[in-house]
Length: 469
Image: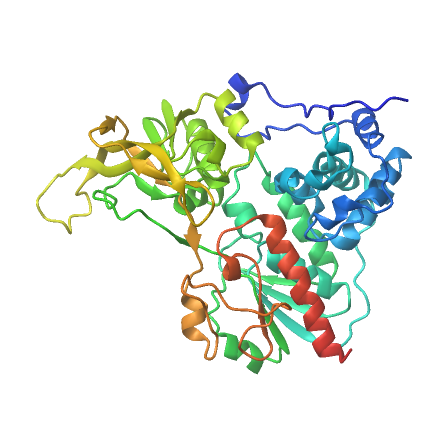
């Protein structure tokens, strides 16, 4: 049977419909399409796709099960390597990892590995009747700081080996960036909650509303009997441009904007948290977070939404699929453009007045691309005399985040780099004995799957250290 040169399309909500609701955009394969896509896999013996997966899922093996319609078997193979398969199938950038290594992709479009992973996980969640069974305890205790992808992965891998693991989460809902940073229309909260519940079934304890560095310190965790601590606290400190007007009301960091929408349920018809429900919005940045913020603003009632990015479309770091979805929904891309000032008006001359200053616009300057910079991308250069003003009343800064310094400042002997990232060795071990770290707390803002990979590395190292292997 000849191989279809193109991967099977992912069905989605129509753009005109989805732009005004928070239901999931991508609808997922049905059984027939999933099997047809699986049959495109060549089953390579050298498995190049596995080398591109940060958590080393046995990709040809799970796809082989799908060819046989053994969907539960496919899920069980994925679950041996990944604690969050339904999440990764939705938000992992497979196109730059496993799929870009696909042998079929050298001639045709690669196999839709991520779409098949999502199908297997969703099939399991819809049909599985048995709960996960915790293994026999091995007598060791480990604390995990943060319930994001690195923390949950580390906790899951250790729990499967019999460790008694307690996860401490600063916010009131477990999931970290998976619940407060990624919009409902890309990753439904129910999907994350199901993955978290599976970890609880394995025996993982999760305590919310505990801020490590305030409620408890790392030293106190050791005093409580934990033998190792994994720090997966993410990168929750937002970056700003330091241009005039950033203190005006109506200027958000992407962190705040998405958190208000996600955890404080601003996306409901009658929200209890104050956030925009109309007007004109500019989102500054070109990554996945910028796309999430822009598309969220549209669903929260914005009349017009701009993406303002200082380089061209080719340099946009966001996933191509997310960019295409944003364009289909009517997001206005202002490329080769950079803000220079946020404009506003004052209600009084007292800068301490809490009602002092509201956004009325944003001055921008046009850019052109010059010589490559240290990142290898062509450096954006201002075009003199090209200033213009965007008429907006809300500005969202989505230009990256840094690790919060709280844990560093309250943990003696913990070394960090100049960006605030915790310094670790190849096993995730920090400069402090018994303390490991991974994910955005080490690297700064990165992908969900890379954070998961770091959690797996640290879990393996902790197990080797505590078990005496």
